[in-house]
Length: 105
Image (cartoon, rainbow, N blue to C red; front, side, top):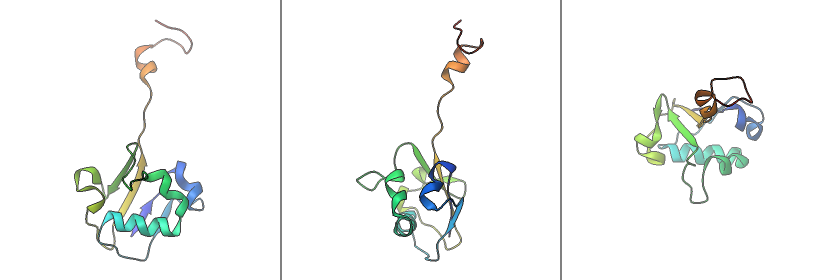
């Protein structure tokens, strides 16, 4: 099972962009628990104190967001590719102010 780690979280996994785990957990929650056992500093950046995925973090199995597949109970297979993707926001001012930076319309 392979985790794809975004740049903002790589400092918590030794700078790796990918982390492979040898276990074959049945669910995303189990896979993340294994990842957090190896890299405990990563947990608080991905999960809340209640153990749920933070709102600004998306987790994908393949190309499917787990929020629509049963969340942490989503089933995974041994060779699954799991991507952790922080939400991206911003740009409102760019679209509402087409002039040069620092000028308002």
